[in-house]
Length: 114
Length: 114
Image 1: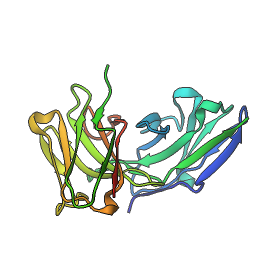
Image 2 (image 1 turned 90 degrees about the vertical axis):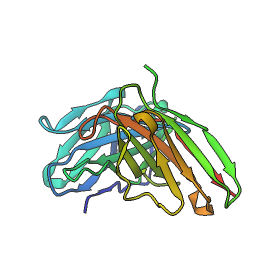
Image 3 (image 1 turned 90 degrees about the horizontal axis):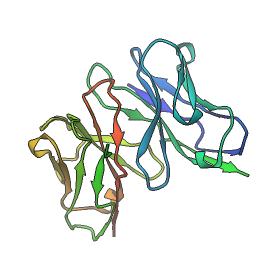
């Protein structure tokens, strides 16, 4: 069965420090992978997506993610975190050939300290 | 371009009462999704529409939940009667088509059942 695991429930990073949010997936075929961000009271906003090709994907707001098939991972990174990056981040996989919609992880809450 | 619009943003009701949520997708988007997001969890698909046809409603609790998408544009999700466990955020999303097309999410409706 398809699944997404985000091992870290909550992460605190100092402003200006680098960030890496982990995502592991279980999927029977080549996955489509996504990272979404959700600020309080807001809907989910797409940061970046991977379908095929270059395994290092650039997204909005200075984020990037790297697809590693051997590790079944799609970790999100940012070299320098800003206070406005504090939010909840969701990794998602899908849809697959069976036509299911996105399957989300449980999310990682990012806090930024000054 | 206007995003996905949802109303109301917040709703508080007594258990056993009916409630309805409305969604207006991005113009031209044929695919519409309703997701349920429980506290501390990622969104989970309830139903997906392709135009006016519900093509994936396997996760919709049909004893109390219903949905419609008349004319393939706006959509309404209804719960009757509501239970305490239905307290959650109900998210609507839309995409041009299904598959690799990006899903755009609305801000959600936060439902509290007392």
